[in-house]
Length: 135
Image (tube, rainbow, N blue to C red):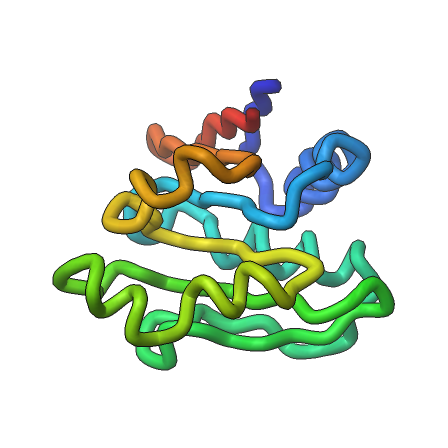
């Protein structure tokens, strides 16, 4: 699925299309700094019924949110230097105990996820327009 976004409000349209497609508890988010990964996550959690305030997990590495469907963990692996650091934060335990794990900058851990069912979203920017690919 592909979407074009020109205004922040259009993220809601993306969520409405994607939510029925979410069948796995892992969602990889790829995109440059400022592409809209955290903004997407804010819209997604609101639509999942979470009342928690969503912020970027850049410094915390993982933020935990609550929803009527269960716990949602939001990761930012940008500062991880190697795969051992990802294991050290207990990634496997999070994956086993979450309704949903949203992983920004997943590249360092992607090979380990190859055999696990997951979704992937890529956000590319060009001026004020974002192109979103979801699979």
